Length: 257
Image 1 (cartoon, one colour):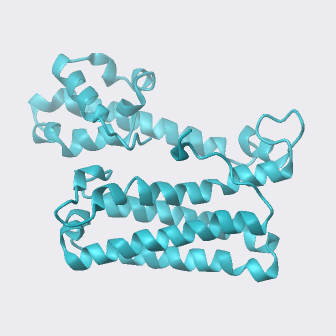
Image 2: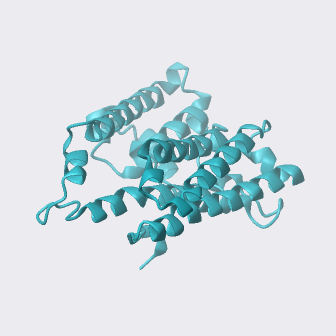
């Protein structure tokens, strides 16, 4: 759904090339689904609606880009629908996780199932902090680069990050993981959710948007607080939570080899 980080600008390069050559294969959702991941999701849709093609997308000259955007949006809807169905009660993925067995491809034991699911929480926080905020924040206002953040064209960076964090908070709350923790470790969950809810409030309060916050001293202070608070929450529902539950953290692709 979102190809990020897009260090080499593959999304814009491929979308621009498709428009320049009039590649009609990008006008079909089914065909889009077979193409590069960079071309399939929200990055391309945002570029079409807020990047260079946006200047003419509502005119006859922008007909191709308009149909391109429609195909991408339909592909996004399909992928999102499949993901939702895949996690629905009775679907194969949750069924396999709920029924560990020696021949189960997802989890041989209940411990493995818990490790696989719970690792998604700190990984999501790491992505929000290390891939969506820090690269753009830089060491100073002068060094900041808003284009290193997703959705900078549409000005939706802060809303997307806040939504990511809200998803983590909701997942923690509905998991009832507190019940599995020793009494002296239950503070980890409440601390993490409280901290993340504060972060979401701070992000929602940055009225000028992400780019303005990167340049404003007060805004930068708030973003720095956000990165610190996310890091602390990640420690609490990551390593510390896993230790309290006697679980082993799984491999994270962002850790490298």
